[in-house]
Length: 240
Image 1 (spheres, one colour):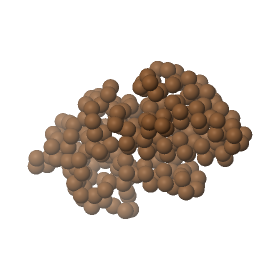
Image 2 (spheres, helix red, strand yellow):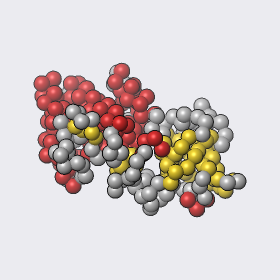
Image 3 (cartoon, one colour):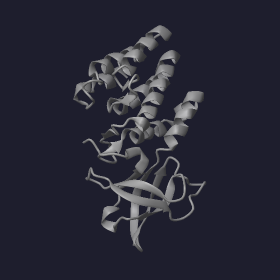
């Protein structure tokens, strides 16, 4: 955990100058990873919540929270129980703030160039579903909240009528019906506004496999490696 923390230049990550304090991140994460009790965990959490990963007084979240998410989850797994509880609380705040923060900050990921912070955080949480499910009520709540930030990765697409039928992998819980979505094309930062709906009923047996109909898109825009996210998560203008 300490090596992962020191490998990041937290000052290179963007954030509002009046709120984001990158020096708090490395110091806070090191302190949380090595905390031996409630007092030490609380002190580290105050650093991270007061301008490191989030700014709790303003309800703001920073891109550093996405970068730090795997480290926080490692603390949940391997750290002192009080440190793990603090890490869960920080992840909970980051996801909640990301939904409400008017800045609608986006981050680059391995699967898209301008992902809303809430969706990027949800992806990390889903990758540690077993750990969170075993972490008590707060871990279970985090997983339930993350499920609302679904993501669909296109693996194959065919033109159909005025839209495209796309086959791929669905992470999270699609709410059903027709939903407004962002279509992120590989190599392109600017998302396209589209309407999506299940082309076939979603299967309970293979919830990760789905076929969605994408209205308002052309076949060349829905090439494999394109990704879809809920429009409500990215309302506003990408800040990259």
